[in-house]
Image (cartoon, rainbow, N blue to C red; front, side):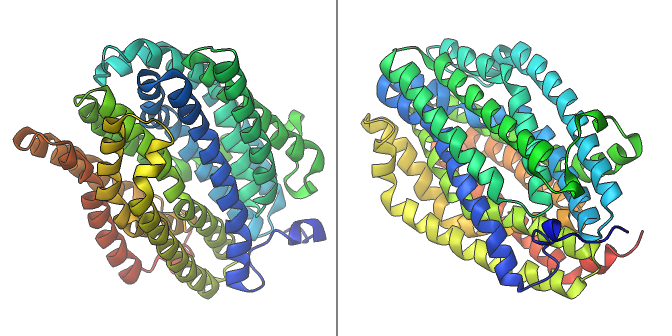
Length: 454
């Protein structure tokens, strides 16, 4: 094993107060996710105010389709992060380097593939989703341009995954702030000043994303400690390492894809209620992203914390960190949910002033926001289990409840009760079921010491 150097030691999560290490890692993630959400919301805010309800509906339906296409590769990147964190925690630096460079090679290939697939399939998927006819042309333009920049999104997630796996959540935050501000300025210029359409909003997004990816790459090539520094010449497909990465990342990638697929089914049912429903629910989805901030930041922090500490064979520390992170995420998520519940009409108004749009967004928020604590619990348990090398458990649980049960419920319930509120209840119901299963597994399974076995 390689000796610990002082530059790498500052990022280790295997020593020092547990609460301080998790909070210190999660807080930059929280700020980063905040700017990421601002980044994602800027298109809808600016388009909704300058181009109207049709354009807002075109952009607002983006989340589920984008996640369907990108989510699989992001899951693989998460698997790479688990592998890197495990070797980094064990101080096996040679293996860290192999994993870093193999993941970058995989990301380049995946980004090119996604660009081709997304550009070719966008129109077909939107039609299959039942996108309203008066929204379809602008939606097609927006998504087609968006997917032309797929390489930037994939590589950004790869680079951020590498940095976060070694405990560096600060630099991705800085780069995300820069790219978020650029995105907003370009949106205002292209849409607000020059009066271009929704395609310009997508162009602004991919240009700013390329900038953030390049900043991360610069950090990894020129500024990172030697332990995980990237050398362009070393980027290659290391098959044994790729097998490890894919075996860890495939369940998360598959999980992301099936959840996104289920949510596309949900979106297609919402589309049946017309463009005002699409615009209102789409505006809420952007606000909902802010509610997910404490959930995602603690889930990611726990994955890294658990991976590094189990790699270092600090099993009791891993258990204590899991309990602390769970508690923080659940409490913070519920507080945010209560805030959104009471302020939602004003928040939707910021996107569009049409009363019907506000009514749809408010109805969805007041159905689901008080259940954010269950979503937080499920995501954090999934993050803990991924960090422990048990990514199959959250994959199967979410496949069952967030895909099969959710789609079955909507298909049957909407047939008998044709109300959009029936669709909204799909989320709290399936979050509740997954939380029950995760709680039972977390309390009964020996997930920590199972990691000890080869």
